[in-house]
Length: 218
Image 1 (cartoon, rainbow, N blue to C red):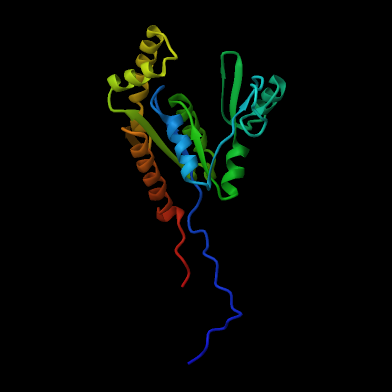
Image 2: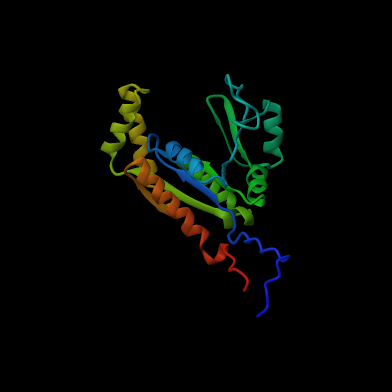
């Protein structure tokens, strides 16, 4: 009987699935930020996409960690060069997502997480169609409470908006929820732990798709 060659090192397991670009959207108060935070804590190989902005850094914020801070002129130059996948101006400040930010992390083998509103999700979906790498990696998830009453309760618990503002948010939420059919997955929010469990199941399912996987060599 032949003895095993002790000098032969075991083969390292090859990475057998392509990285994902996971987009999570929800109406205001729907819980997408909480879910994104939990996903990042649960999957160390996942990273969030860093957004560019023209607003001034807040105390404690770091360039390249919280945001990429640009001057208005720098931001405009990037817009004109077509560098952004999506950008918008909100309350006088511009925000944008660089194509290079997403492609760089995906090419490094990282799963990238996007936390965006419904309008931003539509823009990113459309723009990704023109970028093969992004189109193939993109997985969209719509998160929503089970009813408008549940959403209203959540908004009230935040104690951050007056009654009139809450009603305005609810009216917008009804329009946003009607867009759920444009997403790959619909996740009806229940509890933080259950939302996370099902979101992780979505990630694992997408990782096992034949189009993204490579079988081990025998």
